[in-house]
Amino acid sequence: MASPSFPLPLAAILCIYIVLPISAELQRFQHHQKHDGSLIFLVVGDWGRKGQYNQSLIAAQMGKMGDKLDIDFVVSTGDNFYNSGIKDVNDPLFRLSFSNIYTAKSLRKQWYSVLGNHDYRGNALAQISPLLRKIDRRWFCQRTFILNAGVAEFFFIDTTPFISDYFNDPIHHYDWRGLFPRQKYLKNLLKDLEKALMQSTARWKIVVGHHAIRSIGHHGDSPELVKHLVPILKANNVDMYINGHDHCLQHISSRDSPLLYLTSGAGSKAWRGDVKENHSDLVKFFYDGQGFMSVQMNETLTNIAFYNVFGENIHQWRVAKSMLHSSI
Ligand SMILES: *[C@@H]1O[C@H](CO)[C@@H](O)[C@H](O)[C@H]1NC(C)=O
Ligand SMILES: *[C@@H]1O[C@H](CO)[C@@H](O)[C@H](O)[C@H]1NC(C)=O
Ligand SMILES: *[C@@H]1O[C@H](CO)[C@@H](O)[C@H](O)[C@H]1NC(C)=O
Image (tube, rainbow, N blue to C red; front, top):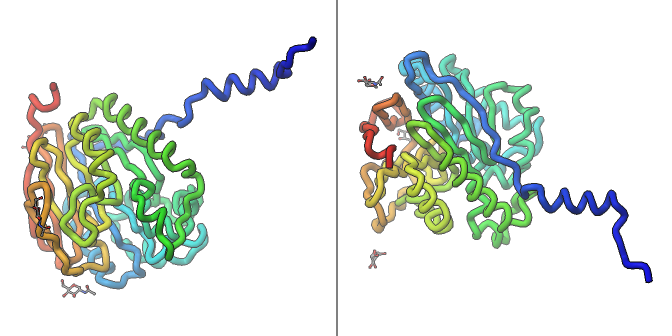
């Protein structure tokens, strides 16, 4: 009696398939810090509205501040194009809401960006396509990636697929191509993030995502991120989690760790006016209007500031890097 057997090539393919890791390692990129070992960048989020809702005013103030501080790059916390991302790589919105708005010389630097929920309502693959860099070479947007910038390492993460509500949204369509099965995607993302954070030897560890972990603004906390991200961030001594989503500026400190929750999602439409009274962590600053954030860091000190539409510094503080903290 002949026993069933796979032809050898098929057996080999099955075998290879099984031993391959399900996800590839997170892609890593490098941005050189200044010669003196410092790093300076601006953060803006929730902006792309063809200049409307004070987007152009904020862009002009970012240009001035970028020049004054001699920034290395810009971080965008997502919701880059309203209302529904971009249609394809030739969508005029890319120029109308990005290239034609952030025209200052100091902003002609790399823009490192994540996708927001509104970006997922359009063609998410187009927004992360390298073809956009042919139109404007400042643009750099990926779902999840690591940026090594010397004194700091950045972990940009794709937070939209964490939020269950979007998968039960009867009104809007989301471009989930490449994300199913969802649970596997999220599990791999968390595993890759945790591994990368554990391996990181950077002085400062910064995680950037669109959705807030902690927020007293309109959307409030994201329970999915509180549950899945916070333990990983705290266990790996992440210094700050930076997000957008709520159209405001916020500085929140966690009660039991040095982790800071910073919202910079005030790049255009703001003044929502519905602030939550209840919150789990220490709210140090909240501003409901348009604005952006600057971060200046070196080996020992980080200086963080928020600015309004007039370019006025409305909140500023310093964080010192204690030698003890990083050696635990
Ligand atoms: C633009 O900014 C000014 C100053 O903060 C504010 O009074 C005005 O309401 C803003 N416009 C919009 C559309 O938010
Ligand atoms: C605020 O939080 C406390 C403690 O979690 C709770 O007892 C209280 O009902 C909350 N109040 C509101 C208005 O949500
Ligand atoms: C970091 O910056 C602060 C403030 O500018 C400065 O006093 C300090 O010497 C710098 N540290 C290093 C290691 O360059």
